[in-house]
Image 1: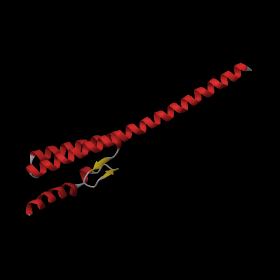
Image 2: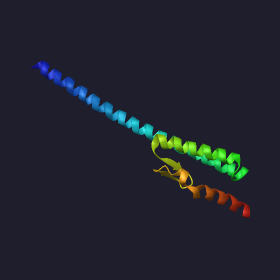
Image 3: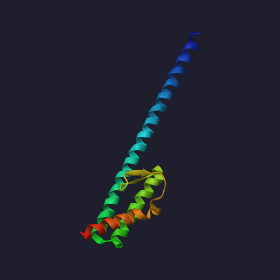
Image 4: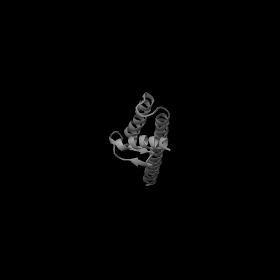
Length: 120
């Protein structure tokens, strides 16, 4: 009888430890996903700043701007592949669709803003 109680106690302890371990693992996975998403946001924001700087200093259509656009798209693609979302600093929001390459007005707005700055 005593050995049955001991076995029940061992099983209960093992089950409790397993459940606790799974909870910790789940929390770790969620934290890692949040950290990864934050990293993506910062990397895309930096690529957007570099693109904007190149646009201001070299003008639309320059090889510098095209290079920075490729860098920006690569960061967006990287984040999309890791998180199925990408950060848009201009709109200050996450996109849940892979639509940055179809966002024609996004880059034209930046060009227009730059051109408008030179009007005054």
